[in-house]
Length: 263
Image 1 (cartoon, one colour):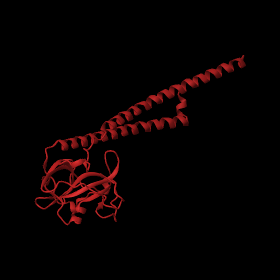
Image 2: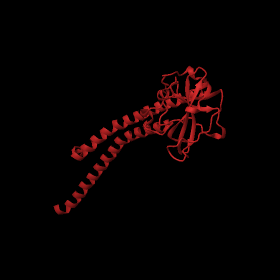
Image 3: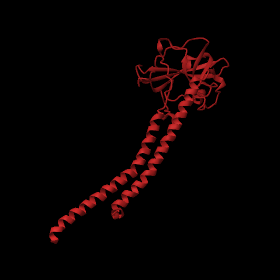
Image 4: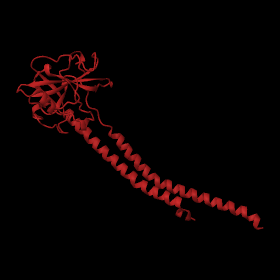
């Protein structure tokens, strides 16, 4: 009755089904791991954003690599901006996906060390890509800045190529080691995305808070893959029963057609 399962076609169908089941189960497990990783990162970011502000030198120092636990921590620093040596970071977008620059201004601390401050986004509305754009000045004199601590940018982490031969005072990546060489100063590891004081006229446009990664989507994908895995044996049984029914119907019709010839 089920000898057709030994045919070449059905052996292949059965083998494919047997391979699909563990493959889909593994894909579901992988998606669940991605869900757990993203949920953990979201919680890490949330914890960092809600933590009490601390002086920047409590978390970073010259040559320091900002860790995952330190990223997005709110820090404060006292000193003054050095606008004479500020640069702009090319090919950066704002919340509306408009291309422009990030303004990177050295902030000289009271002890002489330098903190890199990303003051926010400005549009690329200069006369040319090579011209240094007009940048609103920050507050002068001694002040306290507040911002979210960020790790140095690298090509590996960002996917942005660190191009050479750029126009004067324009860079591709925010990297404290490179800026330390350019400035000839002790530069704290990483940089901060400024949150206070807010700029006059809302320009430069302060960078927005980091958004949550869509962990729920990975959870849904995991359930989807496991449902697919459960559907494979059900589908195989349905196909087998349909094949058996079709074969029995064909045999019945052949018998009925052969009966008058035998009389």
